Amino acid sequence: MLKVTNMNTYYGNIYAVKDVSFDVSKGDIISLIGANGAGKSTILKTISGLLHSKTGSITFLDQDISKVAPHQVVKSGLAHVPEGRRVFLSMSVQENLEMGSYTQPKKLMAARIEDVYDKFPRLKERYKQVAGTLSGGEQQMLAMGRAMMSHPALLMLDEPSMGLAPLLVEQIFNIIKELNDAGTTILLVEQNARMALSIANKGYVLETGKIITSGPGKELLENEIVKKAYLGG
Image (cartoon, rainbow, N blue to C red; front, side, top):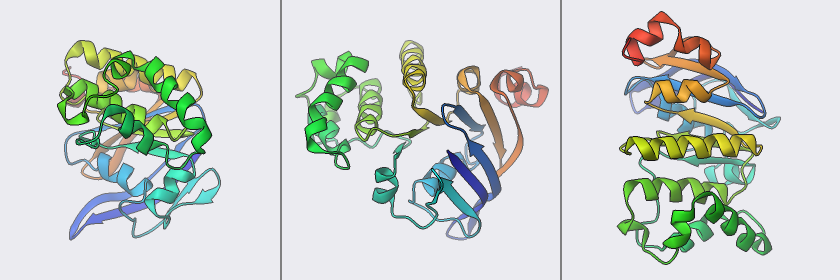
């Protein structure tokens, strides 16, 4: 579904992602793990068109999206939930969801909103509430729900558990698994390496912009380098 080849991305003069290549197959959950500053978020931003790689290519559903504008990337079926949620703080929950459906036929909007509310009942309870007054967990649900409104084939999630209480983290990961079981392919960036690898078909470990190892999620959970660096073992 997604093929990243020789990605090299800079922030100004900072060489953030160094010759990264990986694949995402339809139906997979792929996890990118690594310390802060390892390049994980930069990879997602480059795939979604917010940044551009100096070399290589990014192919999504057999189309090169390396130079495609972000809104066109969304139209192609790829949605990105950024780190920090980035909901529209002055809009209501319902208005945020409506904004997420701008690439879709209007006749489908109501059904898509109800689907989001089925996944996140708490959002339905607060549909008129201004997003800026929601808790961190509720804003994360809203950011995910807004991305779901575009009916993506591939959903990219950047640190969905950041700053959330353990019970909410478990709930968010259960929903990620439900979305995947329903047919959405997932590319997940996550500091909680144990949770991320436990649901991943495959994981990639990044260090200073490079992939240093990869493998099935459950195998990486037993990898001594990974255990020592990211799992407290």
